[in-house]
Image (tube, rainbow, N blue to C red; front, top):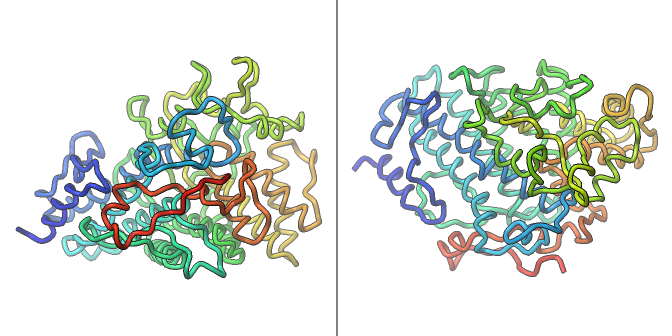
Length: 467
């Protein structure tokens, strides 16, 4: 048997990352299908690469669950009506058996495995496309590893990153390789290395199928800004965010309804990388929007009074329209996804870049404080109206205000808990729902199947929640 085909066949037999019946099947425009027997030329490798993008769009990953789980761990959701797995995550009591959480562990590794297969078949790709295909595959591998590490691995703390355990790094498609947790240093080095390769080798525009969007140079730069910011490496975060803002050709949405327009049937003007949805039957954002959409029924995810009070404190804040405390008496719901049967999902966008550049600049201090004030003022003017609120000049107040605006701007996008952890990792006191940023429950429990696949060498996360 051909060795490459043997790896593919064995991949579908893996228990830890199940769901491989269509492991190498993808229909980018409705009629192409690729199987393990068909990876014989450049076109089939290209379809395999497209299939890796498909895994990113799964409801178990960027299609909604990774954002939803992050929101459950944060403080934007009212947990009083949650049950089972969602309640366990909300109360920092996830367990090894919970499938809701386990799927968001498995799915990124499925995307990684497809990306690795692309890299293993590069001998079939012409020189003219080889570098771009490799860059796209490494971009997919990087962002998948980064996201799973933020939920299951310890945050990046510079003084302890060499020993803090994160998640397994998989650079081979062979699922028989026993998983071993890498350190935070190793994981972030892998993520950055892959993104830097993507940044250097992707063109500014990538287009294959008219209905799809692909990673490009600016997607990689935007993710590098996010990764470095998560590491509290503020100069690097500032530089990458500044590059994206200054040179990508993208700009902030300055319309009066910007706060409702990031998730619509059309791609946001701010999007730097995202998921494509084509119809209500092909809604890659359904897992995300379905938890919040409130114009038809009381949704599963309701809004906490903590967030509502913050969001409605200023009468002139346009974003107050995102919240409804009237339709369902006793509940506060989000209107962000209402009247939208399908939505594009921007995974990284210009609003995040402005907020990242602003806070990184404020942390750097000195002459960068002016940059932070200018960026924050743009966000404030857009939300509250021109000159209604003024960015503070004091460094600490400036950082605090940027963080508050970040929470309001990125609601339901899975950002808040990662900021709680990042701020704690920086050395500040940081709590969410009364729990410290580094209590055991802040890390999701690995699936039992992953632990069992290497009983001698796989170290589970500490149990005990955050009590």
